[in-house]
Amino acid sequence: MSRPLRKVVFPVAGLGTRFLPATKVVAKEMLPVLDRPLIQYAVDEAVDAGADTLIFVTNRYKHSIADYFDTAYELEQKLERAGKKELLALVQNVVPKHVRCVFVTQAEALGLGHAVLCAKPVIGDEPFGVILPDDLIWNKGPGALRQMTEFAASEGAGAIAVEEVPHEQTDKYGIVDAVPVNERAALIKHVVEKPKPDVAPSNLAIVGRYVLPGRIFELLEKTRPGAGGEIQLTDGIAALLAEQKVYAYRFDGTRFDCGSKLGLVRATLHFALEDPSLAEATRQFVNAAKH
Ligand code: G1P
Image (cartoon, rainbow, N blue to C red; front, side):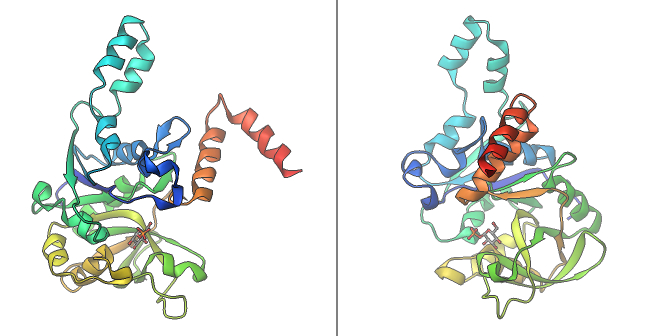
């Protein structure tokens, strides 16, 4: 696993039912945090980690994600003619020129493990990253996936992003049982998908970032449906642990759970407060709302 990471998978076939009715026509990953869709934050993080191939596992209804990464000829021509160079650059630079986007269809919603397995023909046998765009991770330095990629390469192992969650929420996450090796990393002994709080081995939860070896695909092919009747990535990783080291990694950064309304609101406020042109007015609005 010491080869650099080139490929990152984005499982984006989910229905986004928590955001209905908006998600009747807008893919969940296209919901904006300020002026950028969620998927853009995820893609930027992948590119920051060194990826040059982005693999979107989508479904047949979600054309907007492919459209977003495609060339918008008419719009670009109009902006060019109007001399609106900055806007043109925004439209053209959603991914750098050297990065290619590949779209794979997940025909049936059989679970996250199955979605990742759909990327096998594009990845083959090399280490790759997975980003779940719902989990938006912000920080000022290197992105979470880059931090994990560097750690995984130095150890020749896999890495999964984790953070502590309230104990009563263990049944919303994959939960790891791991032995710390330094202040950020812990060697995973065991991993279980969405355990009830009374049987959870810890409150250290998987958040949506993974660096995995190509071997995981063969293990996912053999993985039977687990929690929720779905083929779980967590169960594939549990099988991988019998063969290889995988570390839980506490990244430096703040995670926003944008799969929930509150998380999306928090992320939006956070980015508004980080934006010099919006910060003061946002602060005033938030302070006024307190009273
Ligand atoms: C998925 C994974 C889970 C992980 C979570 C992080 O669950 O299966 O292990 O903790 O993402 O967001 P989901 O949120 O898709 O149910």
